[in-house]
Length: 95
Image 1 (cartoon, rainbow, N blue to C red):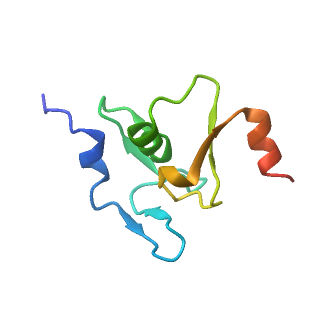
Image 2 (image 1 turned 180 degrees about the horizontal axis):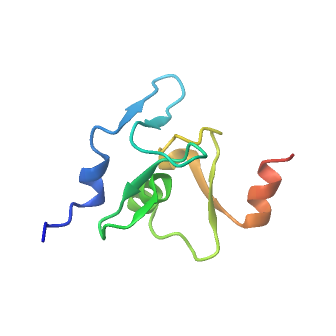
């Protein structure tokens, strides 16, 4: 059995920083909605923006969602994210 890679090692070289916007653009695999996907330290395939948020900001409270304040789904910069309720998230994206 292979040793598990820490999540930080899985992120190395898989994003670029946009000097103008501050976004960290994910270059790795994505789902059908352009959200990055990456294996966490336990080997689970998860949304990479949630992984980076947890690495920098700490655990996400159960029931909260992560909103990209910058509006870029491929951004994994935790400074550009905010933990919000489903209602707040829906209000941030009016249809």
